[in-house]
Length: 291
Image 1 (tube, rainbow, N blue to C red):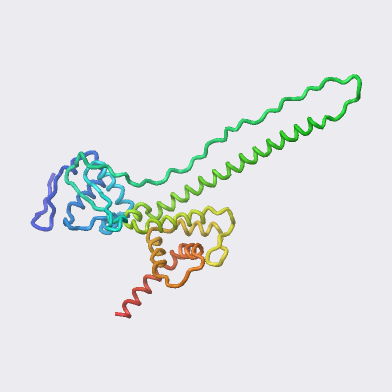
Image 2 (cartoon, rainbow, N blue to C red):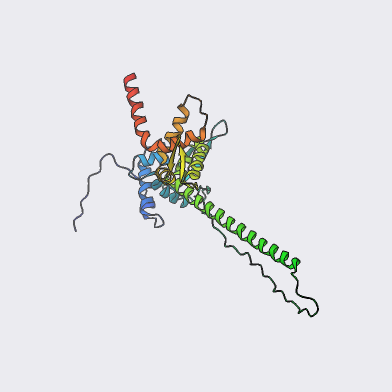
């Protein structure tokens, strides 16, 4: 079988074959490490930076990076600014795995809430036995009737409380599932890693959207209008990381006083998919005319 070779006299990378022969690594991890080793030494490594020169999404880059970190080819360290706040993430890349790298605890998605089965035992009522009366006619025993009524009321109360608790557990489980899905859609881990200063703002927006998609009403009030809950849920589940950064950016440039911040953010999130591109286009046109 013929083998065709290409003359390599410029624009090529020299690297160790160690990682290419490492059977512990997936093909994606080997390819990503090869790409990283081909980049200049002073290149600013980040999940979004690597995604910008690849066909993969930020989530697709984060997975092989964790794999390289697990097997000692990569070490990531969170730096701190002079004011004590979290800074950028520094990357150290190795051509061969290092055995004694400190293990960093990476963020992981929340586990879904599980509902424990109700194990309350039903109350048992001892049947009443009456002795036959031979002297006086039978009379109604008001004390026994009151006792039976109290027992029935108690059983009904416990049943209602159990039902309410089960409904509350179900709602909490549903909210956690939606919250995890929203975090996945907006690449929450990547946002938190790339923009530590905006992490609290991102958390607030996630909680706001989670409440809106789980509201137990047919309509949600957004921007002064009553919008069907299903429409709001579908819109919020379409949001990605770019929409979140867009809403945070709009908040920073807003100069007017906001009287109802809850409604302002809810409306901004709801309108983000249909206003973001127009907003950036208008900004570019403004800059061009100003130039």
